[in-house]
Structure formats: C-alpha cells, structure tokens
Length: 175
Image (cartoon, rainbow, N blue to C red; front, top):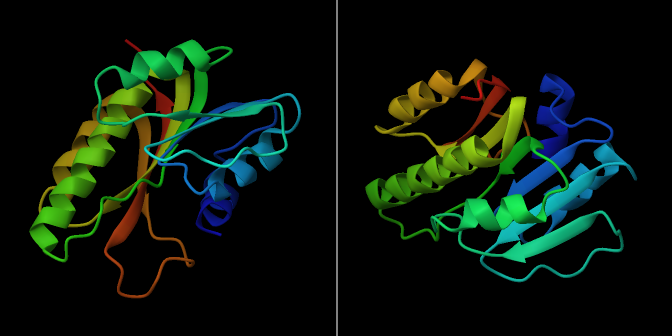
C-alpha cells in the first residue's frame, strides 16, 4: 500500500516506464510497478535473496547486494534503456540497537542514491526508504544536490511510531 499511496500523491510510476526496485523481495513492489508500467514497460528487481518468478515477461530479477560497487553495472546491463525511476524499500536486518539500525538504513539509502546516479535517465525519479535519525538530514541534503525536487513523506500505510520515512526525488540532474 505504501508504494501505491506515494505514487498516487507524487506521480512516480508511468506507463511504459523502466523501473529498478532495490530490496525487491518478496515482490510486492514489483507487482505494483508492473501494473503501472503495463506491457510496454520494464521492471527489474534486485535483492540479496532470490525472488519467485512473476508471470510477466517484462519483470526480471537479479540476486545482488546493492552495497556492492559492481551492482550498478550489473543493473545497467539488464536494462533496455536508462531507468525512469529507482525504488528502494530496502531495510537493514534490525539489531535492536537504534544507532546501528539507523546507520545501516542510511548505508542502504546511500547505495540506492549511488545506483540511481548510475542508471537513471536525465529527469528520472527516486523513492527511497530511510530510518529517521541524526544522519537523515545529511542524506536528504545529498539527494537535493542530484535532484531538483525533493520531499520527505510518511505514507498512511506506515506503522504509527515507525521511524521510517520515504524520500521522494524528481528531475534527476544527470552530469
């Protein structure tokens, strides 16, 4: 529901679009993305774990670590063209130690930002989940350097009291 709510509000997914979904297991966001891009679009899911094959020819998956520096090139090779949007709902394994969990969340968000920089078309979009905390504002500032529009949102589908927030970025400034 989170992706659907954010898409309705910010117009992220478009017919015929190319989507990269980071942290894609078990596949819910892949299905929502495929529904929005239709038959003419393409969706690539990336996760550490294999994802069960979905019944569409225009969804493929890749088993890879988004923090591995080789992953952006692996993703690029699978795409039919530069991506229109990079999604990341990736979450670290929760340790229960807030500072550690927050830092790991920021690490995953920074990996998503780096992948976006490598695979997005000019004008592309980014949606990334981040746990709020002391490193959050610095991350948002870094996103603002690469995109013209940046908003932080907490969809209604997020649990009450959850520290997760979504950074929505549009109009990628390709360099």
